[in-house]
Length: 333
Image (tube, rainbow, N blue to C red; front, side, top):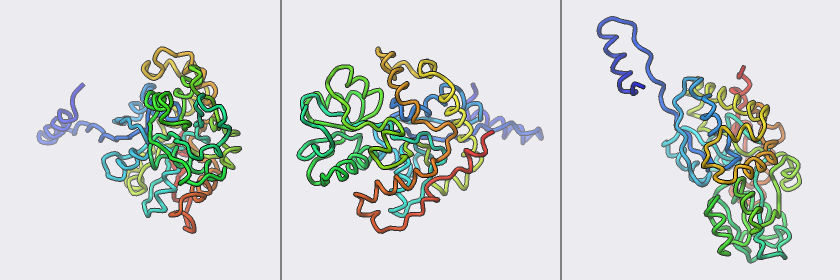
């Protein structure tokens, strides 16, 4: 396949000799994913595997990162155009005077659980976080936000326990096995591995809409494609193509079995436990939206959760209508 440089040179040569210019290669769009092996962010890699970016004539590069807060930092620095991460960052950033918006809403539940180490059978709820070390993907990440909220709701102040950034997958598992953390928030496929080994048990389950409503007080839109508002306004054609690709992916998830979806994923995502990966996806597939549209009551729940413990958001007027848009997903044919 000719390189971008070769195509541009060909276009320039054609213009010089008076021929119709050749089509130029699309500009690369870089999207960082807060851990693309996590099932909550499955639509990112699945869209690539299904060829939907190419169908839209998009040159998309997916970068992997361990935590949403690091992905957010890269986007704000301008090194990437978008993030596949939790919608709550859009709300949090507006409180800091920065405007970003979810352009495709992947899920309507966090897809996360709090696991408690089997070494601590007396740990029954978030009230037992007091004096403990609780694992999150990163400080300032969505798992950190949710952990602080669940603790606050249970009467445990932020200074009465410690949140430790331990990532996901192997690093999370090692941290719990080595007793660096006594509980922690994580997602599939890490959940399945921990439960299968007997090293942990589920303390709080937010893998379904019902579970999220019970834990968080309402529908909690989570995984999304979010981008700087200014970039979205200047690049509407590209954003529409991204929306086309991701909505097609969500439709695929909605109309195919967990086993069929797993066949499209890289083998390293499930390793030697393909059945466990499928089982986890079967349990959590319902968290994904079918159309990429923001759940109507979701943003208010997210704001309420964040304002319960984030002092910088308390008393601030947040315009939730500027934290997401349905313009592009509703235009998908």
